[in-house]
Length: 152
Image (tube, rainbow, N blue to C red; front, side):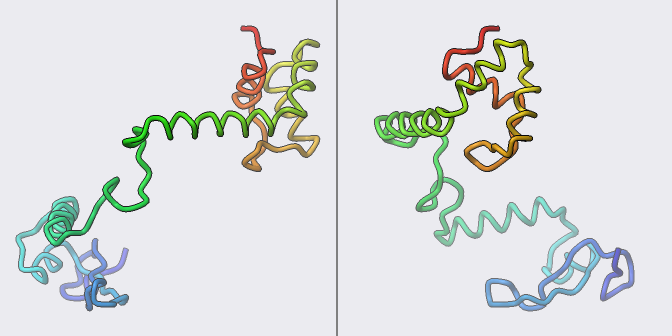
């Protein structure tokens, strides 16, 4: 841990000599007490300073969280029809991506292979999920369930 630039105590903050909003990028290490002095505050926890900063940003008109343009809205937003169509497209993409290997997965499962065994075989054969990641038993189970080949 570095030492406070001012008093030599262990430093817990990297203070921007020139504020970031004004283009500053260089920092100096400061302990909590000295950092609070710089800001003219009583010693405050980082969470309190963050909360104050967010409140100031909101007061100045900055849009935060899901109110930002282009932010993802987990609730489906104001258009449930668009959310439904997006789900259908996602399902169709998954069906198409796994069409070729779903039959092989089903055959391996019928011969008694576990989901983990199937995942290992697919990965060993150089096959990946549609996101380019190695297979695991949960993903194999989902594909088999999707095509109706998974029972219990």
